[in-house]
Length: 117
Image 1 (tube, rainbow, N blue to C red):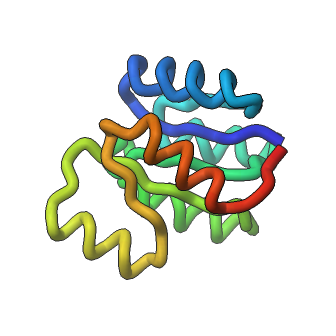
Image 2 (cartoon, rainbow, N blue to C red):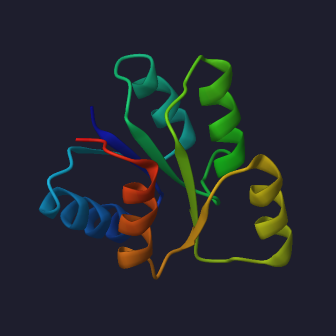
């Protein structure tokens, strides 16, 4: 099962893919929440990493849509703009938040979920 990564920044998608595939994970990337939702109906990920700021919805909106579609994969929210308001919203949702200067932090959050491959 792949790790889904959702971010509108191609450089973030590329670096996250490179890092995670180098650790043995299978990765699928998406540029928007709507592309994540469309892909989710076709394949089920073992984990979803979602940017908080997307072009078509927030990362929390995408998370809620995945959950309402029956998705149970763990979700990690990433952001380059960790304001107090964003931190609080993500905390209230019960999700981990990782800042985008994140290579080691993201790998640690994924490994904390447990064995995924």
